[in-house]
Image (cartoon, rainbow, N blue to C red; front, side, top):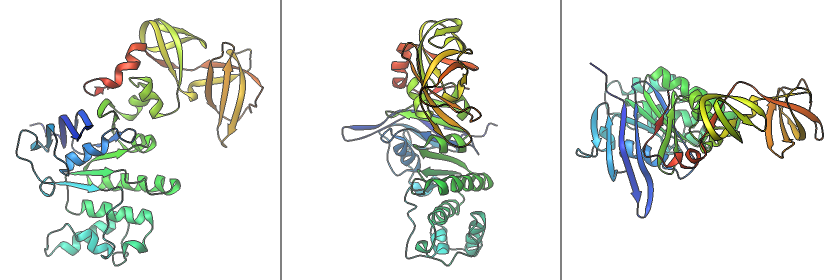
Length: 358
């Protein structure tokens, strides 16, 4: 017998007055998997999370958790009966309660309550800090307490709403690695909401890219980065050069010469070239270009350049050769590139359901 999905949303929609927060969202999360909803502020990703948690009622569509309908065509199931834990952006810790009491807050009174709290403290690496108050902890430690509290009742699915946004960059990287490890060890399914592409790409098994209340593409991080369905998705996931081209089957003719396409096309196209896919050499090797400026970052450098026809590009290269403004160089494209049909590029984010790429 097939195990039911941890979470399944079908044609989910939600409006607040005249504002449509979620237009139509459908996806399924397999048990034990980690999913991220990624998108700009106001795209509806937090509303989707709150609908799954039971903090909002959907206007249309259905939500099922572990195969059981919790909203839609069935009686609405309240949050405390959904077997879902949630970590909020602000952590929402009780300042007047100790760490131990914060973690125990959602647990029923029983003989093994203290044991469960101790187990959670050990899981999140805070053993020995149970009697401290939240204000006596660092931001990263507070975040772990919030995670321990959400995991203490043994939920089947964990929901995380921008959980790292209050941390500085250096701490954020370390804490998200810790959280990923803790969730893996706990064996729960998880959905992360974030506008940070690094968080989504480094933590999740699959990423749902959201714009305007819809998931426009749902795929594994590598697939999403290398095979975005539109320039809009490509730009959100990282730096991107978009150049015009004329496709002829497996190749396209561009200002950078003939490039190899991942998928055959015919006619006018828009070509995605990531900065790291541009090779900088001497003028004799590649399309001639003039360096406008460069920035040094230790192991790599970012280089902005202009081709003879006025096309401007950004490249990322190693530092074995230093480029300065005014230098001449030859630029070439490595590997296969993605091509978009111009009309698809303009309309793809308006698709009615998620475009799933495997």
